Image (cartoon, rainbow, N blue to C red; front, side):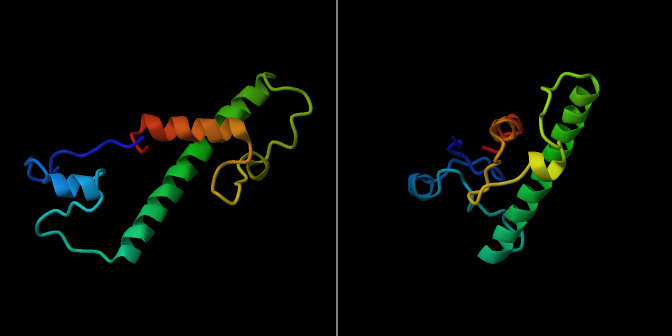
Length: 114
């Protein structure tokens, strides 16, 4: 669940109730003097951030997986264990391996991304 932004993060002033009602997360708050981006550019920026965050998550999760494998802590017959086999995604973007999907949500929550 996302947080409702009650104050402008750039000025510290309270947001107007109609602004809060139409944009509770404050996604459209714009810093005075900052360049305006098109919706396409903003969406591309969000996609790039998501991609980079997923990449960092997958690298950390795979390093942990490898450590557990070397220590003999994984179940026998656990599959090939390749990144492709572990981090495949469903059409909706969720990880197909439910353990990693749950970990991804925990990763995002810990970083304040959800």
